[in-house]
Image (cartoon, rainbow, N blue to C red):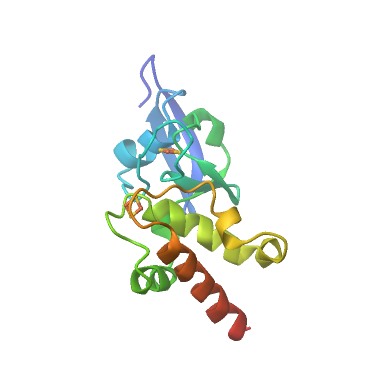
Length: 157
Ligand code: FES
Ligand code: FES
């Protein structure tokens, strides 16, 4: 039930109709993690700079730390919990993960690139991943993992 400071917000979360009572300006990242228990999306900077909190809003990657929850009313939100585990395999085997704080956001962006292969024709993977910061890996493992996944996908088409 809503109190005076909260409102009921209805949206689709990972394919499931969802209702949550939160303050309208609560960050989507907090709503996902603390009100709905989906802790896969991580907080890094909290300022829209690092990409650790990346989710899809109506199919487009956004930083959940910058999105007020009221903004997702009637929308489709997808989080790292909706991503098939196989999509993580290339990351795990290429050394793309150390502390893992950036990994959910990296995987969300990488999977979005896989849905839009036309982007890789005009931009390098490194350019396309510029919104996802990693303090640990030096990026080579991340780029290798994504390119390996893209090669696997294109060879099976
Ligand atoms: S925590 Fe959202 S962009 Fe860094
Ligand atoms: S693996 Fe630690 S921030 Fe990327």
